[in-house]
Length: 261
Image (cartoon, rainbow, N blue to C red; front, side, top):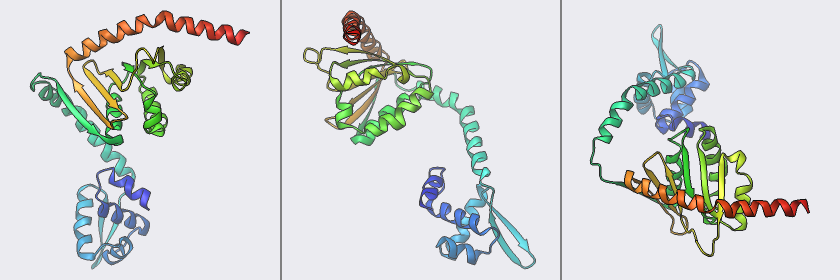
Protein backbone atom coordinates (compact mmCIF):
# COMPACT_ATOMS: atom_id res chain seq x y z
CA UNK A 1 0.00 0.00 0.00
CA UNK A 2 2.84 2.40 0.78
CA UNK A 3 3.91 2.72 -2.86
CA UNK A 4 0.31 3.22 -3.96
CA UNK A 5 -0.27 5.81 -1.24
CA UNK A 6 2.86 7.70 -2.24
CA UNK A 7 1.82 7.55 -5.89
CA UNK A 8 -1.62 8.95 -5.10
CA UNK A 9 -0.08 11.71 -3.01
CA UNK A 10 1.90 12.77 -6.07
CA UNK A 11 -1.46 13.09 -7.84
CA UNK A 12 -2.45 15.80 -5.35
CA UNK A 13 -4.25 13.61 -2.83
CA UNK A 14 -3.47 13.99 0.85
CA UNK A 15 -2.18 10.95 2.71
CA UNK A 16 -5.56 10.41 4.39
CA UNK A 17 -7.41 10.84 1.09
CA UNK A 18 -5.10 8.29 -0.53
CA UNK A 19 -5.53 5.79 2.33
CA UNK A 20 -9.31 6.14 2.37
CA UNK A 21 -9.59 5.88 -1.42
CA UNK A 22 -7.50 2.68 -1.45
CA UNK A 23 -9.57 1.22 1.41
CA UNK A 24 -12.82 1.98 -0.42
CA UNK A 25 -11.40 0.56 -3.65
CA UNK A 26 -10.63 -2.74 -1.91
CA UNK A 27 -13.99 -2.93 -0.16
CA UNK A 28 -16.23 -2.11 -3.10
CA UNK A 29 -19.52 -0.74 -1.75
CA UNK A 30 -19.24 -0.28 2.02
CA UNK A 31 -20.65 1.82 4.81
CA UNK A 32 -18.70 4.43 6.69
CA UNK A 33 -17.86 2.08 9.57
CA UNK A 34 -16.12 -0.44 7.32
CA UNK A 35 -14.27 2.22 5.38
CA UNK A 36 -13.16 3.90 8.59
CA UNK A 37 -11.87 0.63 10.02
CA UNK A 38 -10.14 -0.46 6.82
CA UNK A 39 -8.39 2.88 6.31
CA UNK A 40 -7.50 3.40 9.97
CA UNK A 41 -9.14 6.83 9.90
CA UNK A 42 -11.57 7.98 12.58
CA UNK A 43 -15.19 7.92 11.47
CA UNK A 44 -15.76 11.65 12.04
CA UNK A 45 -12.70 12.48 9.95
CA UNK A 46 -13.63 9.91 7.30
CA UNK A 47 -16.85 11.80 6.51
CA UNK A 48 -14.90 14.97 5.71
CA UNK A 49 -12.40 13.06 3.57
CA UNK A 50 -15.20 11.34 1.65
CA UNK A 51 -16.74 14.73 0.90
CA UNK A 52 -13.38 15.95 -0.36
CA UNK A 53 -12.99 12.87 -2.58
CA UNK A 54 -16.53 13.34 -3.88
CA UNK A 55 -15.69 16.86 -5.05
CA UNK A 56 -12.72 15.37 -6.92
CA UNK A 57 -14.95 12.76 -8.54
CA UNK A 58 -13.18 9.91 -6.76
CA UNK A 59 -15.95 8.73 -4.42
CA UNK A 60 -19.58 7.77 -5.07
CA UNK A 61 -22.38 7.85 -2.48
CA UNK A 62 -25.33 5.50 -2.94
CA UNK A 63 -28.53 5.18 -0.86
CA UNK A 64 -29.93 1.68 -0.28
CA UNK A 65 -33.19 2.25 1.56
CA UNK A 66 -32.29 3.78 4.90
CA UNK A 67 -28.63 2.89 4.50
CA UNK A 68 -25.91 4.93 2.82
CA UNK A 69 -22.92 3.24 1.28
CA UNK A 70 -19.88 4.55 -0.52
CA UNK A 71 -17.62 3.23 -3.25
CA UNK A 72 -14.41 4.42 -4.86
CA UNK A 73 -14.71 5.68 -8.42
CA UNK A 74 -12.99 3.83 -11.27
CA UNK A 75 -9.23 4.57 -11.11
CA UNK A 76 -9.48 5.87 -14.69
CA UNK A 77 -11.05 8.95 -13.08
CA UNK A 78 -7.56 9.84 -11.86
CA UNK A 79 -6.30 9.81 -15.42
CA UNK A 80 -9.29 11.89 -16.57
CA UNK A 81 -8.59 14.40 -13.81
CA UNK A 82 -4.94 14.72 -14.86
CA UNK A 83 -6.01 15.26 -18.48
CA UNK A 84 -8.41 17.99 -17.37
CA UNK A 85 -5.59 19.67 -15.43
CA UNK A 86 -3.24 19.47 -18.42
CA UNK A 87 -5.94 20.91 -20.69
CA UNK A 88 -6.53 23.79 -18.28
CA UNK A 89 -2.79 24.45 -18.00
CA UNK A 90 -2.37 24.52 -21.78
CA UNK A 91 -5.14 27.13 -22.01
CA UNK A 92 -3.72 29.48 -19.37
CA UNK A 93 0.02 28.89 -19.93
CA UNK A 94 0.43 31.55 -22.67
CA UNK A 95 -1.03 34.22 -20.41
CA UNK A 96 1.06 33.07 -17.46
CA UNK A 97 4.20 33.29 -19.60
CA UNK A 98 3.23 36.77 -20.77
CA UNK A 99 2.97 37.88 -17.14
CA UNK A 100 6.32 36.27 -16.32
CA UNK A 101 8.00 37.91 -19.31
CA UNK A 102 6.56 41.29 -18.37
CA UNK A 103 8.44 41.27 -15.08
CA UNK A 104 11.70 43.11 -14.56
CA UNK A 105 14.14 42.24 -17.36
CA UNK A 106 17.10 42.02 -14.98
CA UNK A 107 18.81 38.61 -14.75
CA UNK A 108 16.97 36.17 -12.52
CA UNK A 109 18.98 33.86 -10.28
CA UNK A 110 17.69 30.77 -8.49
CA UNK A 111 19.92 29.01 -5.97
CA UNK A 112 19.59 25.33 -4.98
CA UNK A 113 21.40 23.50 -2.18
CA UNK A 114 22.48 19.86 -1.88
CA UNK A 115 22.21 16.96 -4.31
CA UNK A 116 18.45 17.40 -4.60
CA UNK A 117 19.05 21.02 -5.55
CA UNK A 118 21.52 20.04 -8.25
CA UNK A 119 18.94 17.55 -9.55
CA UNK A 120 16.46 20.43 -9.90
CA UNK A 121 18.87 22.23 -12.24
CA UNK A 122 19.14 19.11 -14.42
CA UNK A 123 15.35 18.70 -14.42
CA UNK A 124 14.88 22.29 -15.58
CA UNK A 125 16.82 21.55 -18.78
CA UNK A 126 14.18 18.92 -19.66
CA UNK A 127 11.56 21.65 -20.12
CA UNK A 128 13.05 22.50 -23.54
CA UNK A 129 12.56 19.53 -25.89
CA UNK A 130 13.92 19.42 -29.44
CA UNK A 131 16.61 21.97 -28.58
CA UNK A 132 20.37 21.80 -28.31
CA UNK A 133 22.10 22.00 -24.94
CA UNK A 134 25.71 23.19 -24.68
CA UNK A 135 27.71 21.96 -21.71
CA UNK A 136 31.06 22.16 -20.04
CA UNK A 137 31.08 18.96 -17.99
CA UNK A 138 33.36 17.65 -15.25
CA UNK A 139 34.23 14.20 -13.98
CA UNK A 140 33.20 15.44 -10.52
CA UNK A 141 29.62 14.72 -11.61
CA UNK A 142 30.57 11.03 -11.66
CA UNK A 143 32.77 11.09 -8.57
CA UNK A 144 30.64 13.22 -6.27
CA UNK A 145 27.05 13.14 -7.53
CA UNK A 146 24.21 10.65 -7.96
CA UNK A 147 25.20 8.60 -11.02
CA UNK A 148 21.96 6.58 -10.87
CA UNK A 149 19.97 9.83 -11.20
CA UNK A 150 21.99 10.81 -14.25
CA UNK A 151 21.85 7.41 -15.97
CA UNK A 152 18.41 6.15 -14.95
CA UNK A 153 16.35 9.34 -14.67
CA UNK A 154 17.93 12.26 -16.49
CA UNK A 155 19.53 10.67 -19.57
CA UNK A 156 16.48 8.59 -20.67
CA UNK A 157 14.20 11.63 -20.36
CA UNK A 158 16.62 13.88 -22.22
CA UNK A 159 16.89 11.35 -25.06
CA UNK A 160 13.11 10.91 -25.11
CA UNK A 161 12.67 14.67 -25.44
CA UNK A 162 15.30 14.77 -28.23
CA UNK A 163 17.52 17.25 -26.46
CA UNK A 164 20.88 17.03 -28.22
CA UNK A 165 24.07 17.89 -26.34
CA UNK A 166 27.43 19.21 -27.36
CA UNK A 167 29.76 18.74 -24.42
CA UNK A 168 33.31 19.85 -23.63
CA UNK A 169 34.91 17.60 -21.03
CA UNK A 170 38.34 17.11 -19.42
CA UNK A 171 40.50 14.47 -21.07
CA UNK A 172 40.47 11.92 -18.23
CA UNK A 173 39.53 8.25 -18.19
CA UNK A 174 36.00 8.76 -16.85
CA UNK A 175 35.24 11.31 -19.56
CA UNK A 176 36.72 9.11 -22.28
CA UNK A 177 34.24 6.43 -21.24
CA UNK A 178 31.53 9.11 -21.22
CA UNK A 179 32.46 10.01 -24.81
CA UNK A 180 32.31 6.37 -25.97
CA UNK A 181 28.50 6.30 -25.51
CA UNK A 182 27.91 9.63 -27.24
CA UNK A 183 25.88 8.25 -30.14
CA UNK A 184 23.19 6.52 -28.08
CA UNK A 185 23.15 9.46 -25.66
CA UNK A 186 22.32 12.04 -28.36
CA UNK A 187 25.59 13.76 -27.59
CA UNK A 188 28.85 14.84 -29.16
CA UNK A 189 31.79 15.32 -26.82
CA UNK A 190 35.15 16.98 -27.35
CA UNK A 191 37.91 16.50 -24.81
CA UNK A 192 40.09 19.27 -23.44
CA UNK A 193 43.50 19.05 -21.75
CA UNK A 194 42.52 18.85 -18.09
CA UNK A 195 45.86 20.04 -16.67
CA UNK A 196 45.87 23.20 -18.80
CA UNK A 197 42.14 23.99 -18.76
CA UNK A 198 40.65 22.43 -15.60
CA UNK A 199 36.84 22.26 -15.41
CA UNK A 200 35.59 22.13 -11.81
CA UNK A 201 31.88 22.88 -12.26
CA UNK A 202 29.32 21.91 -14.88
CA UNK A 203 27.77 24.70 -16.94
CA UNK A 204 24.73 24.07 -19.13
CA UNK A 205 23.45 26.55 -21.71
CA UNK A 206 19.84 25.84 -22.68
CA UNK A 207 16.41 27.31 -23.32
CA UNK A 208 17.98 30.18 -25.33
CA UNK A 209 18.53 32.30 -22.20
CA UNK A 210 19.28 29.95 -19.28
CA UNK A 211 22.56 29.02 -17.64
CA UNK A 212 22.61 26.08 -15.24
CA UNK A 213 25.64 25.86 -12.97
CA UNK A 214 26.35 22.80 -10.80
CA UNK A 215 29.17 22.69 -8.26
CA UNK A 216 29.36 19.08 -7.09
CA UNK A 217 32.15 19.56 -4.56
CA UNK A 218 30.37 22.52 -2.99
CA UNK A 219 26.95 20.85 -3.22
CA UNK A 220 24.95 23.61 -4.87
CA UNK A 221 23.35 24.47 -8.16
CA UNK A 222 21.99 27.66 -9.67
CA UNK A 223 19.97 28.79 -12.67
CA UNK A 224 20.60 32.20 -14.21
CA UNK A 225 18.15 33.66 -16.73
CA UNK A 226 19.92 36.32 -18.78
CA UNK A 227 20.03 36.77 -22.52
CA UNK A 228 23.31 38.69 -22.45
CA UNK A 229 25.13 36.26 -20.16
CA UNK A 230 23.77 33.34 -22.19
CA UNK A 231 24.93 34.80 -25.52
CA UNK A 232 28.37 35.64 -24.11
CA UNK A 233 28.91 32.14 -22.74
CA UNK A 234 27.53 30.68 -25.97
CA UNK A 235 30.18 32.58 -27.94
CA UNK A 236 32.92 31.38 -25.57
CA UNK A 237 31.66 27.80 -25.91
CA UNK A 238 31.69 27.98 -29.72
CA UNK A 239 35.26 29.32 -29.72
CA UNK A 240 36.28 26.55 -27.32
CA UNK A 241 34.46 23.95 -29.41
CA UNK A 242 36.14 25.00 -32.66
CA UNK A 243 39.56 25.16 -31.03
CA UNK A 244 39.17 21.54 -29.87
CA UNK A 245 38.15 20.21 -33.31
CA UNK A 246 41.66 19.38 -34.56
CA UNK A 247 42.83 18.06 -31.17
CA UNK A 248 39.94 15.61 -30.96
CA UNK A 249 40.30 14.61 -34.61
CA UNK A 250 43.97 13.80 -34.02
CA UNK A 251 43.11 11.79 -30.93
CA UNK A 252 40.36 9.83 -32.71
CA UNK A 253 42.74 9.10 -35.62
CA UNK A 254 45.36 7.87 -33.14
CA UNK A 255 42.86 5.57 -31.46
CA UNK A 256 41.80 4.07 -34.79
CA UNK A 257 45.43 3.46 -35.75
CA UNK A 258 46.13 1.73 -32.42
CA UNK A 259 43.06 -0.50 -32.86
CA UNK A 260 44.12 -1.47 -36.40
CA UNK A 261 47.59 -2.40 -35.13
